[in-house]
Image (tube, rainbow, N blue to C red; front, top):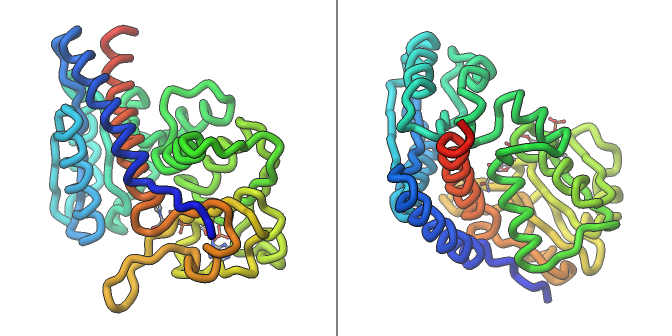
Length: 285
Ligand code: NDP
């Protein structure tokens, strides 16, 4: 039987601390850390994410500005919105909810966000800082996973870590963070040969592919720590991860459920990053 890594519990405890830190910062500086979130179009999943971010900000004492734009917003219109937020000194964090409609170049949009307000840490300057280990912001999901591992005192040093998935927002930064903590890291992807055998080497297995219940017991070594990043909705509306929890859980030592594992941690890191952006803009001018 695995220990269940309870992302709701960990995130509630971290958010209590963030709320206290926000309060202390606001009392001292007179400034309310503020996050602006831009949503373009009607994607239902994105709407839910944006709503959850808004609620989480308010609960932490962080100001939340939601900008909802129609699906036919032009790239230039979006760029000029971002520019206005870049210039607004009452806004400390800017997040553009992805994915964007096809006619808008995501890379151009990410590059337009002031790197000091880039609380998602997707701007190439911030990605580069993660590469060198001298960063201000970490991307929300991988940093949230590191917080989970730390909370459960799961040692990374010297451990074999296998990351399945190499996206810019999860897989690659996850690999870098595990490496920074002295894990021995293998990154795998859709062209990896005999993926199950590679995954079975892992002491810590992080799965971020977006394929429901893809990782079964044959991918997992007895006693491994299994982190499931996937969020997939089945035909009957149920949320499932990339890991087949029922078959993997008996073999794992620790495992994250979906929902209630990694998911809540992503927004928690976003709150921390927004506070950090406000602190830096106030005290490091
Ligand atoms: P992407 O689609 O950007 O990347 C998926 C990665 O998985 C790619 O590197 C791809 O390989 C790899 N992959 C796809 N199929 C296979 C396969 N059969 N075998 C091995 N590797 C495969 O996804 P994201 O990283 O953005 O997201 C992954 C999952 O995590 C999704 O379910 C997403 O919803 C979820 N997610 C959850 C978050 C949370 O807060 N919990 C936050 C962000 C994402 P290749 O590069 O070769 O194509």
